Length: 349
Length: 282
Figure 1 (cartoon, rainbow over the protein chains, first blue to last red):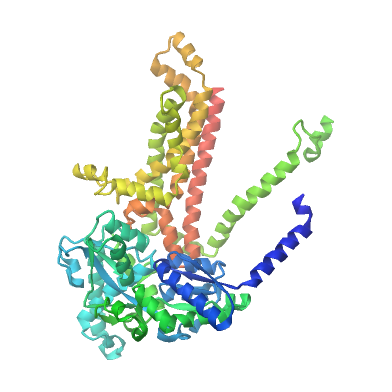
Figure 2: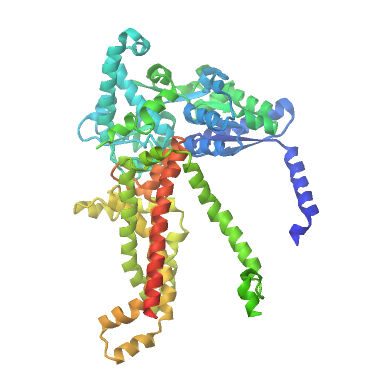
């Protein structure tokens, strides 16, 4: 009966379209631990947009594992902006679905990362095993918890941080990596780095598929002595689970984790939201965006805008970038994480 | 009339129950939409690979290890459920006791719970600091984060399939039949072996097949308790996700196709076995 009356359906559709046209929405597809950050940030942005343009907009969020989120966008989830854990996943959106241009990462400052983080150690209160730096992880009797880098984007930063530390230790100066005359020295260092990460992953008793699963294993199941974690997630864990149970140890050297953001060109052009989406991402770089990032435990790109009290929580650490050590995400992924890569070889019988 | 029906089976006279054409049409379109077309997509995506790529993907040592674990673990879990599910169904059908309704409802819980929740609950219980995991660890058995953990999760999610399939079959089997067997001189073992089991065998096989097929594809609950160590406790669905995480869609579907074919062969042979056992018991 209902279906025989197209006029009803048409009028419903028309009504829905009018209703949608009345207020524009923006879909931000993000990864898991940005939930709290974007809750605050979206409220600030909606207010800011209303104050400057008089338009009321709504921001919708989607959170999940970074790889899964990227696949959703590739498969047709209409994200106006993506704010993911690693550039590799956004590259895939461009490559597999052609939704954004190749040079997307140079469109915004700091390789499109308005906030950054790094990899730190979460240990049990009082640090009973005396873990201070990467080398301590290989001491006998230490169990290390880290998710599987093949299924977790965040865990790839953990692996790369360990590798980079070993390279730094062997070479003393990471600029040697891009110096062709030092190729032999670099190759020897890579062998050492391979030994280091192999030894490290042999001490991992449980490999969860994502960072949240690993947190549960470490915190609730009481397995392992040290949990390799993003700094912002380590802060969240300590805050939620009690500062009396865990503490954060920052190693001497770690990786600069840059979770990038970008507009999804094809989607915003189709939905007519480009101005809004671009303003949204630019607002992340504004003093308010930077302050909120620091409040939610990300290291802001421009620390001068953050609350000094928030900044005090981030200890000094010597950070290297993925470009310096690995020549970018594409190469890191191909050499280390794709099937048959260095990570797989750790588990070859 | 009858001759017309024979010469053109599609233009036969309407049967006693009306609506055959319409419902068959709906059945076929629905099945195509929900089952056949997605499965076809799987095969089409896999066809992007050459034969040698396909073969290389599915015979990789890690993939083979996962097949062994997923299929072997599912088989063990389904067998365990077969034995204990039979007992549970028997008790629920044959005896009345206080709280029977509650026990009956409990059986459905693994159906209804989100698999991640089951996984987390089981892990909490069987981990080294859990209620059961602690004592087991004491006697040298590592329950969670081992192959045993995988089987525990698969048993958990498979139980309702066996119980729910067996219950109606056992209920149909009237107690008088057993009494008749006894009065004709059969002892208890003989009654069980020659009367009860042949009668419920088709249902037993169906329950087993359903529990097995479900277990092969189970992901959510297992990844929490298995520890996901390459070569040791990695289930096949996890490797599929791993491939997807590398945006290797074709590789992922290649593994999925193998799993699908395995499950299909399994279900098919059980169906044949079932036909054979029904025919024999008649």
